Amino acid sequence: MSQESISLTEKSQKEGWLASLARRRDRAQDWMASMVLSEVPVVLVLTAAILTLFGVVMVLSASSVEQISAGYGAFTLARSQAVFAALGLITLGVVGYLIPVTWYRRPWVLNLLMLLLIALLLAVMLVGTTVNGNRNWINIGGMSLQPSELGKPITILWLALVYTRQGRIDQGSSAEVFYKALMPALLGFLTVVGLILTGHDLGTVLIYGLFFAAIFMAAGPSRLVVTTIAGLGGLLVALLVLTSPNRLERIINTFAFWRDCLEASCDQANSGLAALATGGIWGVGLGQSRQKYSYLPEAQNDYIFAVVGEEIGLGGCLIILTLYALLIYCCLRIILRSADLFIRYASIGLMTWLVGQALLNIAMVAGIMPVIGVPLPFISAGGSALISSLLGVGLLIAFARQTPMQPLVGQGASLASSPTPQETARRQRLARMVETEQAMIARNPVAAGWTLDKFKALVRRVMDGQPQEQAQVSAGNAAASRPAGQRPARAAAQQSRQASRSEGRPSAPRPSVGRERPSARLQQAQQTGRMTPEAKAQVTAQEKTAQPGQKKGGQAGKPAQTEKSSLPPGLRTIRRARSRD
Image (cartoon, rainbow, N blue to C red):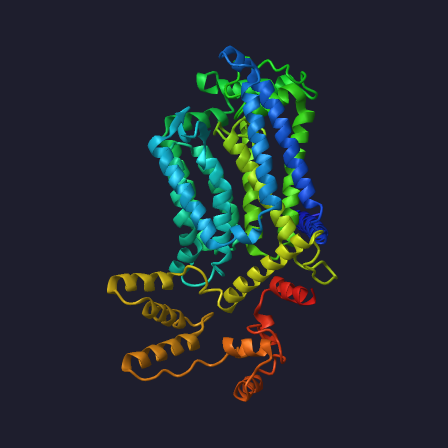
């Protein structure tokens, strides 16, 4: 057989293997997308509770010796961790079961939380506490608070809302695409990350960058924006590493595989590897770690996974990894079933944060990654990190219980699939909010959200001192000049009305869209049954002028049947299911 024939055979086998792998992936996705979400909250609660209780036990085991040597009681740090675990589980229950998603899905709520987070980070820079070279903590009421940890779920929700309301971020000129895809998100994100980086905490900044990249990629940016941001991000990280001798030394020590690192900077990494090697498959026994006797720095914090590996062995480590895999499984179930882009983006961000941070911590302990100082979620000591992680799980529980869902394969959609009437009502309220929001975006997805045209109009209004209404007309004219994806008729109508007002002529009435609503007086007269002949004639005239696609007595403001084709499939599902309910 010739060399050419062999290469063609290998190529065909490779293509067949890739096609088979793609079919298996599609079948797995269809299988997960056809499952209901009723058991997802239960799995999330059990997973978070097991990880949290296990973390309290491991904090007691890893910190007792050093606490005694420092003159404290053996249970001092574990008792504090147990208190934070109780507060975190209460937070999980309140967020997951009591607070509706529609409450914190509103822009003003998330903007207020972002402003509060920025204020706390500024307070850290002014009156914060420095620990191990990082300035991340602030004392409030006798308690040490780490705003950068509590800011992770807040920033994820804010980014999810921004990209939900942005519409299409991959169409337009280069300047328009860059502005629409990056400017709204970076406006708040860079402020938070910059303040954290001022405290020299590069590990936390990497976690922020990780979930930002996940949400950003899920929003569907253009290839030009992705490559540019990846290049600039890599350049920024390289500059931060090269300008810090400590960071550069840790990276060289990790990846210099041709030599054994015996310097003092490698003591922590070598002790972690020694702990994992000592544990073997079954471990030396719970509480029997040897490295925790002041050999392993930060044994109860960043390197607690080394103590886990030493005491309960490889089997216990695999159980921990399985619990984190359950978090991924639950998040994928929510993402595949949800018809709300906000919940999809937020679930992607929460999954990337919790599981990505866990994998980075484990890779750091195993010597695959340099020491970057990120805790292991749910297990490492630290009240702010624990409460923040349990808050993230509470958000996932709320999403699973309240999200408007995509239709099952081969079946109709149903919103009233919650076990309680309260959950059903919350799911329907969220569906109405999603439908209203996305229907407005679907009319013109390119011009939705924060665009370059709106920014230019705002700048002109500020520079020229023109009123707000005139700035809106200018933005409409700029949007109407585009050849595709715009609404020139609406912009022209606004320009005509503005010209009529400037010349003193009465403007032409706006064309009626849909059925005209009666006045408040006529509605009250209809309800009380006391209508004058003139009022009855007015209502009859309004009913005759209604569009043919709307029935008599229909709900005012309800879109016509022909408008459904412009909605995304998930929103048509919501409308059809809610009409049946």
